[in-house]
Amino acid sequence: MRKGILSIAAVAALSLGLTACGGESGETGASSSAAPASSAAAAKPGKIGVILPDSKSSARWETADRKYLEEAFKAAGVAYDIQNAQGDKTAFQTIADQMITGGVTVLAIVNLDSGTGKAVLDKAKAQGVATIDYDRLTLGGNADYYVSFDNTAVGKLQGEGLVKCLTDMKADKPIVAELHGSPTDNNATLFKEGYESILKPKYDSGEYVAGPADAVPDWDNAQAGTIFEQQLTKEPKIAGVLAANDGLGNAAISVLKKNKLNGKVPVTGQDATVQGLQNILAGDQCMTVYKAVKQEADATADLAIALAQGQKPAATGTVKDTETGADVPAVLLTPKAIFFDSVKEVVADGFVTKEELCTADFADKCTEAGVS
Ligand code: BGC
Image (cartoon, rainbow, N blue to C red; front, side, top):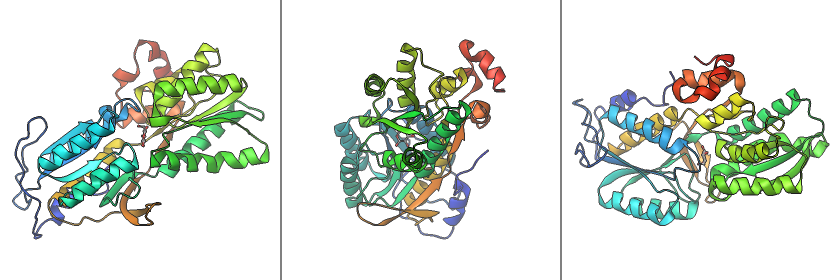
């Protein structure tokens, strides 16, 4: 339904007549390679490595990113290797070293923090490997490209979403708690900028009251529960929760449930995970932000393939690396807010299936929300 910014076909067409210097490929690597494309024009593009961050801070990395990246690489017939560092910075380095030694010509990473991300990017560059920051910008990292969503826009949608839900509930001077993402994730900084641009004027005018606000290290969902428990103890009248993703939102909802406050206190989220969407259907979560990861994976695959062929593909814009002041060539996609009535759009887009979402407990709500 939606398409990546550069289609794979367009990149292949671009490659006509260009001399590629991507290195060898087409080898079927142990776990994850696809047969090479048969196009006469397509130069052998070399192997593409991707390192995902973990599988706990959000369900998206294993359920969406891996799947869509694999589909895109397979469709293009390029060799690839996708691995997950499982939140371990040392493992992240080791995986990167192995990929570089193993001959990847392009490396895309979702960093665990900018410092360790930069170390990996520096090594890759020193070996002539092209680099892509996937989803998270590595500050000071000088990646060749950055592919993500407009993350400040994500935060704005969260802030506006919370305002909508509080308005619908006719909340009077609500006390709002905030659960920010990991302080080491540049995206968390951008999300916060986005939602504070909506909430701060309301705090300043006295329309809303700023309650407890804390960052959640490494987006750790379990820790988020403990943090929210403390927030609620400190401020029992919390009337709204700006949670930076569905995992943090679910942690807050679990605590609200224990206190019989779920459904009375709107909570935000992000990623349109099955759990987040079910929380919305149940009335416990106010909204989530849907990021069509297929678009992000397709755009990354298009760039990676062109880079592996020795080309210099066009980006659609730039983002500022706030550490170096450099403009990093970037592809930024558009996020969408999802409420009860629009849950069906996420299903229609193929991001989650009706089967996984509309399990027995949610069947009636699915019908009510028009999920088909
Ligand atoms: C991503 C979010 C994700 C979070 C935790 C962020 O960098 O943009 O989609 O929920 O990391 O993994």
